[in-house]
Length: 560
Image (cartoon, rainbow, N blue to C red; front, top):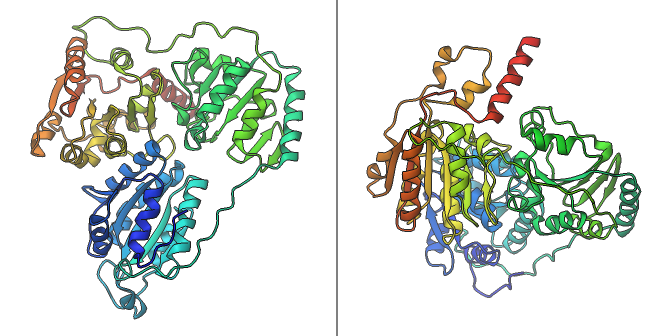
């Protein structure tokens, strides 16, 4: 809790609260209604303003920053700025990302008089945009010197508890006003219902008496609620195989001998699917049962054989136990008395085998093994929605790697500004961006932001002549007729030059050329941004996971 100091302004107090949460950078774009916020930040010690090329990209960058550091903040101007950021904020809501969105609004007197101000709908309604944000955030507040000491901590607490974005708007003339001091509202720490916990443990013990094969599934909320350590301890205690769902990749150490891969129903590895679906007991931690995670409904998981652990609720078969914190049930299960005797054995991963022919043209079967081989411990891997998202899901990550992708929201263009945000969040870790030619054309401006801020990621751009992902998913129309999935041909290796900076770049078409480019990038990325364009001649080349999805969609179409 922040101590209230005399003569501190609303803006200073806001930044004190954010700084206390470990936020050392705030993303955003300047606008005339947020000048007082930015002027206060300019003079504030300990937080730097990171200027994005537009509000959408700044929001994407803030999203990834929060995934790395736990929380982030974004500053936009009223109306035009906050509306541009809406897509990024909605994505953070969908993906359980805690982000503090701060909006500078017109002068308070102008709002009271309902004047027709620029950046508004010209109807005198200054609350309309906050009302929009009520649907895509977990909390909204209009800050004043009188309520700031209450509202700011409340918003931050809700963002932390719910792992969702929150929205704070403040008039430009109130930011530098002295805070009117009064005591803050104390935080109520959620506690586990002990009776519910004990009843659940007894129920689970009874189920385990007849179990021969158990498996553990991890998903996105394992990551957001920092449950990786207790989940790892539970897996080792029970000696069960562990798989992640698509949206929960990197929620479990993929270098661990008990990790078997991503469970993808009918589309994923047959070995993983068989292990998961033949289990007679499943523990699922932090699962979101989306169409992505259930592989378009092809996942075959019996809820009556499942213990579903959520951050503060628990389901055991058909029974629900409320107010049971995940940390406590995970701890209890470690001592429940069950340990699987059957060895997990040697698991083969899809990209363990290298395609050696250096003169062969690039294809998914050859570049994914090379990507897997080049990854290092503690890398941050940022993957775009598209063919890359399906292929990279099957790449085995090294120990300590963080995987960032929009598994649920899937806004094309997210990954490039997200990689920028990840670079800012931790300058000591290597960041690798995997994006497509179609995707980067939406948000390429943030390559400029990377260069301007001294970021040195390794960027892979898959040039497969358009929106290949859309071509795969649209099975109703012949590919040749899908003119809307074509894009202009860019000279991607000239992007850094166009932005007035230098970078290592390579355009590769064969396995041997990619090997050389990776070697050079590994050598140079400590000194400069590296960009490798992967040119794939066959526009319908794709990882097996995506090919299986298309086969499934074609069968579904024929059944109509």
